[in-house]
Structures are given as C-alpha cells and as structure tokens.
Image 1 (cartoon, rainbow, N blue to C red):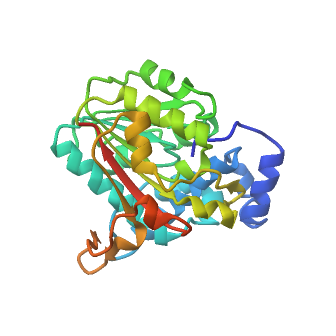
Image 2: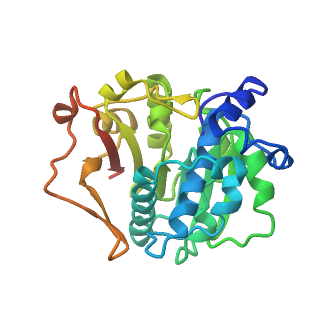
Length: 300
C-alpha cells in the first residue's frame, strides 16, 4: 500500500512483532523484506490471494501470489472475508469497463497485485502501479522473467502524503489523461488522512477522461472509533460521504456505495453477486454505524 514514508529500523522491528520470529528467522532474512507497515499489508494481501488460488472453487487465480507474498506475507495472510470479494469485484469492474473502452488501469496503492500478469483477455490494457518505493524494491526483482498478460506495465514509486507528487510521477511514466481509465484503490482510503484523500480525489478527477471509473473499498466514519490497526498500520481515513466527495472534489458523476453485507460470494458458481435487497450505504444509513463500503463512481 502507498501511504507512510519509508523508515528503516523501527518499522522492521514492528513487522517482526507482527509476523512472529518464525517468519523472520534466519531463513526469511535471506529474502528481502519491505520497510513499512503499509507495504507489508500488501504482502499480506498477496498471501490471501494465494490461499484463494489454492481452493478448488476459487473465484480467481494468481500464480504469482506465493512469490509476491514472500515468507513474511505468507506467515500472516490478510482476511479472506474481505480479500476474496474485493479482488473479484475489482476484476469484474475492470473487465466491464474494458468492454466499454477503458484502456488504462491505475492501481493506487498497488502493493503486490499481479493483475498485469494474471488477467487474460485485456490485450490493449496499459497498467500503472502506484505505491511506495520499498514495495517496488522488493517486488520488481521477483517479477524478473515473468510474461505480461497486458500491453504494458509501469511501476510508479511515490507517496500519497506529498500532495500532487504521485500524479506528476504517473504522468511522467506515460499515463495519458485523454484515455478512459479504470482506477482501483483497494485497501488504501482507510490509511489516508482526510487531506490526502481529498488530494487523491482531486488529482484522479483531473486525470480522468470521460468514461473513466473508480472502485475502492472504505469504511464509514464510525470505524475510526474502533481504532483498527492492521500489522501496525492504523485506520485514519473514513467517511459516510464518499460518493458525494468524489462528485464535489473529483468532478465525477454517477456513483454508488455498496454496503459490504450486500456482496455475496457464490462458491458454487465461482462468482460474486450483489444482493440488491440491501439499500445503498448512504450517509444517513452509515451515520453512527460501522459499515464496510464498496464504492464505485464514473466520469460522465
């Protein structure tokens, strides 16, 4: 994930406490480790994708998940309860918008995502992965010799905590703001401050051509009172108003905030379904409640 500045020493010690001595023993130390808690959550996510890939009724397959998770990630997978539906929702979202003309994918807080290598049928797609430098220092050597499933892939090392920097770096990497784009920000918004989230929405809006679309997960404002922390990375971002924020700050048009409880995993048919009986997670419905959100917006 792409949030905090890169720090050595204290973060490495904190990660050791999170994953345990068995994961960071002498064998694991022969393998390069990430240097921030936020980047470590990306390895946890890869480990969760590995678990799903190994199931006979998996909703997706990620052949690189074992390698990208590394020993440190495999020792502490992220919860499948969120990773499986979120990953498949993002996959379906991308495919749907590709059929409608989107030809760029930007993974904001990409972590150890491997869509550029695992998703077939998207031959014209250009993928841009945006994350912390430490993520790519570990990730890129692991991808040596692997074949892309898409037209191209670029790794953009930057920070969301420095306003405007990530957008400039993305443009310098060849991103074309005139081309409809799918933006996926999975496991990101809850780690961003209100100011950084607003800057993200502003920059995404300015870089989005008509037909572009955003999907991200998030949590309602009440979640901050729970003081959630994942592997040492605390939740500092939450809102009951994400769709309205994307409209007012980013200039997006239509949007919808799904209550996560409406997202159903159908193992028999190896897909996810949205239970339309659940009402939209509006600000009024989220007020005072801890709600996990799946948010989608489109540029009209």
